[in-house]
Amino acid sequence: MSKVLLIIGIALGVYWLWRQGRMAEAREARASKPAAPATARSSAAQAPQDMVACAHCGLHLPRSEALADGPGGSAPFYCSPAHRQSGRQA
Image (tube, rainbow, N blue to C red; front, side, top):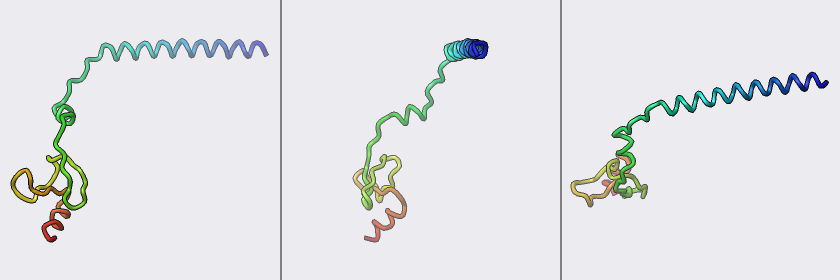
């Protein structure tokens, strides 16, 4: 019985040493890898945007994604063409 426990202990020790070596290699690879530069899309996504509410359902969305029902910044905004159409009919 003690020989079985000894073999299990040795196997666990070898596994632990192998895993430590793999983790050290991964850390070195991450440290030597240059950081990826920020893309224009990610920096634009982080910039705050004006939010507007859909005149039909009240959903808030960025002004750049909203559909305006006329010229000017104070025109009613809609979240979809269907809501813009229903707003015109009302």
